[in-house]
Image (cartoon, rainbow, N blue to C red):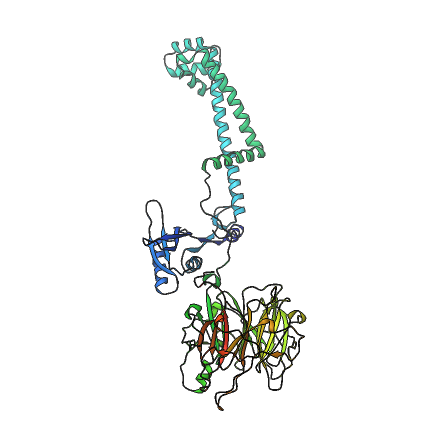
Length: 622
């Protein structure tokens, strides 16, 4: 039974229900080849659940792909008890499969109750509560004991009357023997014993019949002692029964004693376990917390793909297509151009920020899945984004910590810091998170603490670094302050949060990638901390254009990375490359970098997004 709330409501109101769940556990099954697989084993079913119907339902759900992760279903029940084995696939999470089985099958059901009975007068059906039922039962037991005591008292009085007659007979045994021997028949003897005159004993009919039934062997002194003891016992019983008929407290004391005896005789340990109530299973309980890649296109499409879809590749390769290449018109090309590509856990919260300063909250698993070449689904079918608005930044949040902040930056150079806790209750309906100047766009959203630094990079290759602590926390609707002084025609290209490390930068670098596919690593030590609002220093220089028709190169991203990291580089036309950061050489701030990914610049393609793949094991099931 799940929780006590349902039973409490049923007992207090007389109407309600309890959640009943099957008894299951997870076992590790070892095959003949030595490989191990997890299995959900069902040993007990809820009341009134048919096992054959349950197995058929599970099989149907598995075949219809409504329950994933099930490899086999077996009924191993025998004379020792029930045992249904749901064998899982190697990559399935037992807890997720269990939750799916509980929600979609009768392994978890609601058992309803309606307490209705003929109470009181016994003619009108009445709904009763547990308390009223107990009161009625206690009154019934009280009346039962009274009626029983009255009946027993009559029996005791009758027996005492007979015993008194037998004692009189034993005192005058010789006279009775003589009287019986002289009587012509039994009726005459009875009449003489009942005679109250001279020579008679004055016995009642019951006493006379008992005397006539006596045998000679019962006229001994021993039998007289037994009758005397019985008379005393009957006197005590009469006193106790009289007390039960006159004193209510004595009846209640006897009731308690009888209930204790019933408990000792019939009580058995509870077979049904009552476990803490989990509440109704939410969708997140049914989803495995896997690693995924989420892609958002400029045309307003979004999709989610398993991260294992993209294997690691060498630097400078063409890569795998991560979005659809369908369509031949200019509009189709714009729809497929990737604006955001990032990795996350499926249970993470995605803070999706639009260029107009609106933020929407969405769980990663709520993003529809798609193949590498699929276009995705329109964002308005997932979030209520306006037709003239565009998602410009996405922040993945696993936990809304008290000491963390949300850093927001615009293309025009404005920046603000807001406590992350302010976005905890953010839903898909959206909230205003920043007030923007006319023509400005909100582009970046990052998490930070007061001990971090903020790195801002411009499209013309400049960068500035300042302490996040110097930014005063503001409310959701504030505009913020200037992050850096931009040259004419320059805009902010990227914003990152740089974690401070003990003893220098270590293996942490700034990854600079241009729209033409060139990139390099720069030691974070080369970017000294300065005051906010400065011009900054040179972060990268650009190679000369291959032809006059080629667009000028510019910074596409400045990203904080570690040597052990892997990254996903994606172009505007949806070409993806997953490669190790270690393969990209470390150079000075004024170097031009090396070719990171081949880009068809002449065809209008360019580097659109760079995402860092978090460290984890591919088989991780957390």
